[in-house]
Image (cartoon, rainbow, N blue to C red; front, side, top):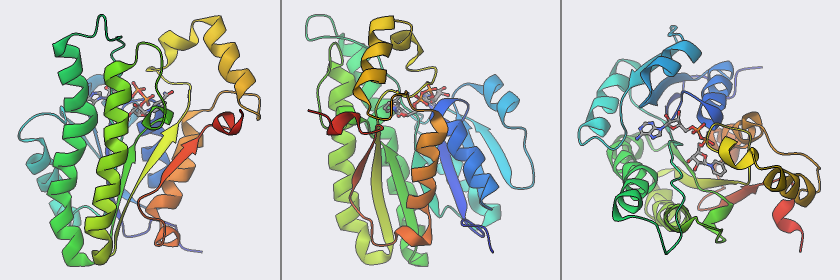
Length: 247
Ligand code: NAD
């Protein structure tokens, strides 16, 4: 049986930890060649030593040159087939205390960088008549939350942007979808998880009875990146153990 992502080249942002790291490991295991990008160089190199099928790039996805640099990094492998816009930040703030700076930085990382990367990879995907774009939304792409003004707005923007991508790119064999995790054990969620009430809330709310791991998001990402998912386009998938199905 051939590997699901044999002969595919993937670009995964925010690859040094959490969900991005799990996606890189899963994609490599399924035969992809992966360019793994993160703004934090040391954890990236520690977690993902380079191999014949894995290249790491220490870069800030918001940098003006980032899309061009990453396209060039993929050139020796024939360009990017799968883009996973996973890098994201959560800078908590309510309408009373969210600063202009934290709002702007949230949108730069969570929305503008995914847009600029999608714009960079789309022409070659169109020429190949095959491509996959997977953006990381959140259940906050559908709902609001306490002190998540900028984060919630940015994840709603990811939903709208992805649906527009799906419409524009579908005619060329390119799909665009977004994943919507609830609370998942990662560095981003750690400060929230340290609050026993928060943890108990999510353990209780999810009918499966536990909080998800990064690998629980990597599996759905693998499916969306595969040939099997060619008719799944413009969708947001809640990866929440059923938490959001409960009234
Ligand atoms: P994480 O903090 O563990 O990983 C995010 C990675 O992105 C880090 O390695 C970080 O260095 C990198 N990064 C941040 N800014 C960057 C930049 N400008 N350029 C390049 N890399 C950058 O967080 P995570 O939980 O794995 O989050 C991954 C994605 O999943 C995010 O988009 C997040 O919003 C989304 N998400 C996470 C959860 C959760 O509970 N963990 C829930 C819903 C959605």
